[in-house]
Length: 260
Image (cartoon, rainbow, N blue to C red; front, side, top):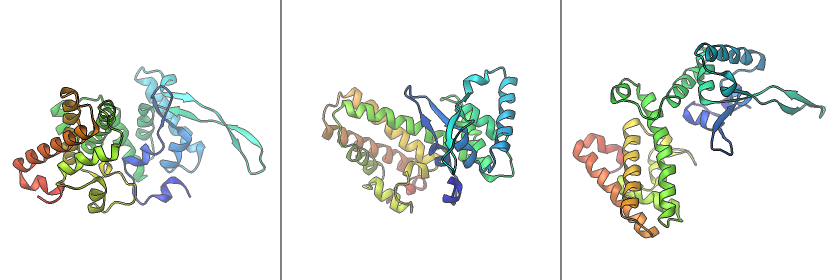
């Protein structure tokens, strides 16, 4: 059973699940793993897509060697014989080009095109550009910013004395979601065990959480918070402030943040 057969739906986690990070913090994807996710049964056919993607890369004046790094590996056959098989380490841009040259009859190709298109954009886009994005594109964009924001917040919280990060993050959620913890939010959304609640939010809800994250980090630094209790209290307070702002902006917008 391949990766796709295990999942009834496709979303950005499909591609995040097979992402790798090297010792320098650089992300990459293996072509053989991407092949399965994009529902190509034969390597021969998928390699022809890679070839087209490399040609597209060359046509833009960008070196293919930086984005399509050959990574041959040993593979064990049924008789225990080992053979060398071809593989590539792909950058996000290489994955985007592969998706652009993939079989558009496959539903997952459309998702890959959207996902990698947004992820290869520069980190800051103009308000006009953002307004032209579809809801899915906005969601992917905001999710990426939120993920990076959480990473930065964790570093700042650690320096502020936080050791119990579940407690710290739940303090923020409780403030924003009127007392709900991350588990409570997941249950309300009907998520399966270990599903990330942030992966199941629309663009507006993600933007509210990103604001909570960035403002909490700023306050921790500005107030020179140095204990876990103070950090949790700060996170909870910022969550409440964001919640209040959302309620004032419109009651309909506040409904997704639990009981109003």
